[in-house]
Image (tube, rainbow over all chains, first blue to last red):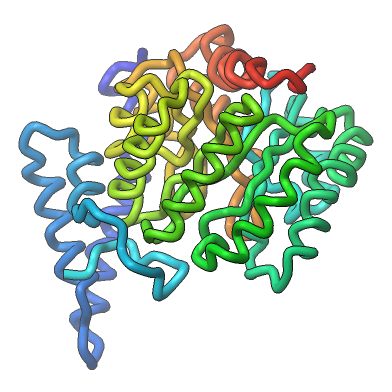
Length: 88
Length: 265
């Protein structure tokens, strides 16, 4: 198994890049006019879940924050695709 | 390094991709029936698709020394019209005995609707009637957690042997649900969603390497037919030895697929 130092060598730069991408995306969203939608607060909840995952691993906590937690089938599909975050 | 691509939608790839996969060490490709990027207008469209899966693609793969197998079903994206879906289901018995058919798949859910679930359960009935293994698609993104739970409940209600079922597209929030119930799990390596190579290896480290495989899915969307080979390289960077890597990319899928009488390499 790699050491922590080796994991840093392998993945730090990619994680740094991805973190800056998220920051720039949030800035971009702030800068532009118009209405936002449910996806914006969902991402903020997911960021909060990453920082405070409780008893979950961080990736699992983020995915759970971006998941539909209802339990019964819906009557019918209105679209075929998915948005990446549940509607409030 | 030799590997098996246990889930690739080769109907949407060029012949060049077969060549690249052969050069990367791919010995077998298993192609589940799925959405073609558009809704088919008639049952005849599915008849042609099943013919393509069972006749044309095995011949195209064989030119590069790759064995090609397939799974049959109507996918959940096209199952919302239950009447149409049942007409497609009626085609399956005509194709089920073809020499490269592995079982029923990839069945599952897309938007977690009542009709999708009903057609899923009818597919499971067919699999039980013909004693076929099952390959399952779990929904995308926000729908995956709920869909995975509904699928597991339906399989338990149907008393299906979990060791003959692989539930695909697991991620960090669903891998444990699947494996803890005794099913096989598949991880799909996509550039923009599902798993990256690094995350797939993390899942192996967190959930074990017993009943799990990885695949590229390589379909009509943004995807990489060499994703399994690239993840094998990534495992090397993470200091896994060749034996362990081969276990994940070759021995594990072989062990599950050998439950299908037609799977021989």
